[in-house]
Image 1 (cartoon, rainbow, N blue to C red):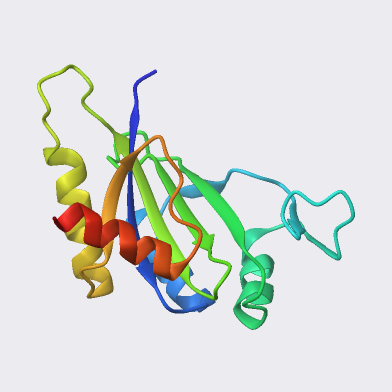
Image 2: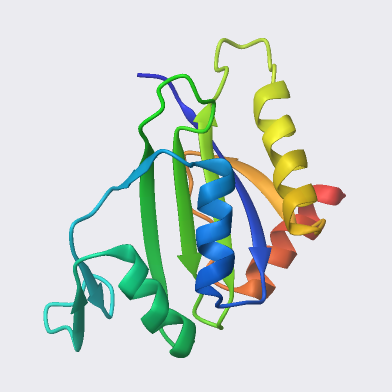
Length: 153
């Protein structure tokens, strides 16, 4: 199994429609990676439980105080986008992520992930994005922007 490059962009939004449109564009043949979702996430005593991501997304759109991570696996093995992710931040934003295979052979070829970041920035009409390797994104909008600004230096 190879390493994955995680490509992220952020939006100050909690729109279910934006999330579904992102998934339909970048991962049209997908399946959820979980079969239950708890609010708060990972809670031993949840206040709500959902058995599908779409119902969870409706809840999160109206409840920006909750953070959550949702993952999908691409069922199209030929597609470069292996996983899709949406992270609902603790301050009401959404981080959109795509995982692609990374070239870890030592020749530092990042064309695959660079192209995906370029596509995602264009799709979301933003410059606020970055690439990490096997690493979750920032927890908040401000932390995300700090990382973007550090990487521009």
